[in-house]
Length: 445
Ligand SMILES: NC(=O)c1ccc[n+]([C@@H]2O[C@H](COP(=O)([O-])OP(=O)(O)OC[C@H]3O[C@@H](n4cnc5c(N)ncnc54)[C@H](O)[C@@H]3O)[C@@H](O)[C@H]2O)c1
Image 1 (cartoon, helix red, strand yellow):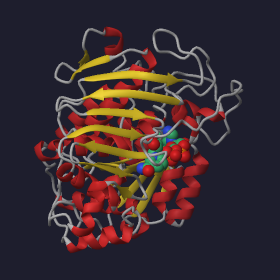
Image 2: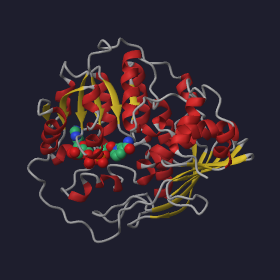
Image 3: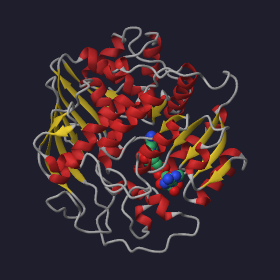
């Protein structure tokens, strides 16, 4: 029988949930220092950068906690309608996010642009003295993650990544159960889901709508003609702007999997593609050979090995997992499966008669939506200067796995990772893919 959300909450409350199970990265990373910017009862000024789908979702509770004073979106219509709907039309709007970073009434920013803009915007915001809530995945490449971590450390800004599963009811409990009730974890199967984008004809380019600054939307990515299917929402299915499901949902699930089973700074030792199906053919250098079609992997299976002996499979689907999307842990003393709606397996059953001891799971804000809890955690950390639940260091470490998996799939060969030298051992071509050329004027640093 799955554990229900209610029984889990009761069990967690009974256990008097108080402290955290920090990852090694969390434990080792020094909390950011710096003064809280406002007294507790004053709402801080927030700028939203990227006013699309997820920003709208956040918008339902943002005004409770912040004064939304500015909205930047390269699509002017989106910035204006967001200001109207979320801030009563009072927020300053612009197509150029740098204008919101210059504003004194902006204490912090929520970045909800497409993936290829996250690192640059976050870096610019930190350097402008703003605390940052940035949607996942924080980066487009491994190298961007290295730089974001460096700037976070230099500027001592609070940075929360939008992996709100860390503020969910189920996942932190699953991490505590996996770490304490499975014995030695042997295998983790991370079922990320298939890319839903369908195969088909190449998309036809068209003229960008007048409200959209297409050049700025493209940012660091190569200059191409406007194609609606490259833009809002569907950018996910192009390696130019994102990483497909591997970084879209992988940013969430690999985060939980590694937190529970491989909380080691070094990351994976090997990353090996076992099977892959792309919507277009790829050349031997890992580049799609068809220009204007979705190109991220639709079906995939990647095996990652870690120094502690854990084998982690990143897959679009698995006969072993009862749902399309979730994480299965198999240890020598039991199993555990978790997704956004349930926890099952022997370790989960044990909680009914043997609640987790006090202090193993972080408390969350008493509101139902995990995203809002995560935002509240960020807000609290901007006041206390503590490390938020989804800190940049652990997130970067988990994304290294996702980015390496995509490189391995694209090159169709096994990679051996050296986390100290920051290189793919004996493979200069794969190492070169840890970063990518950035268009002039939009360089990340
Ligand atoms: N945490 C979650 O559960 C969750 C859920 C959905 C999306 N996301 C993440 O949020 C991000 C946005 O996804 P979405 O579905 O909302 O996409 P979207 O396309 O609906 O919205 C992105 C918006 O950013 C704007 N934009 C692009 N470049 C910009 C720039 N330089 N400055 C300002 N605005 C810019 C676009 O015009 C668009 O309005 C993605 O990285 C995605 O992975 C997270």
